[in-house]
Length: 173
Ligand code: SF4
Ligand code: SF4
Image (cartoon, rainbow, N blue to C red):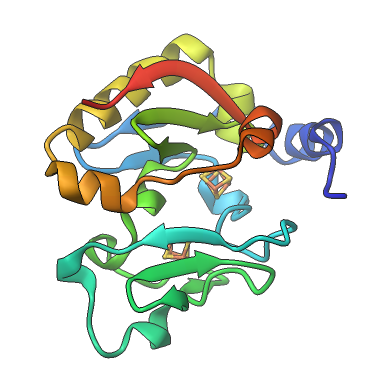
């Protein structure tokens, strides 16, 4: 059993007494909460690793130095966290990070862009603002080839979706 949403909310209220900015920057989401959070880069409570597919141009022989890998093209987060995470944040240039990292707290599941509700940005940012940011992210994703989009999309179990994600009804076509 992981930390409850209520306990996380209590923790985040102490760490983040003021709202921080969340904005779409053309190809990645700028999230003012990340520097004091790192929830989604550090060790995970879930027993199932969180897969982060890499695009073909990101593949190479030294991937295992940057990521824990599920297979030759899939980085993952698990109870060790992410291999690229340091005390000062991610050590990889943006172009080398999985697409998923630049979208979070949004995740592409099938063709739906869903919001991870345990992120402080999700909890403290007005949903109307998040919806606006999410629609810009969806527009950016719509520029990917159908094949690349299908490659990076998750297929999360229904129980996980119900427990951890908010559907703002943003679809990527
Ligand atoms: S959970 Fe949200 S605020 Fe925390 S590191 Fe991830 S994206 Fe940033
Ligand atoms: S690649 Fe960087 S941003 Fe992505 S999960 Fe790892 S540490 Fe976090």
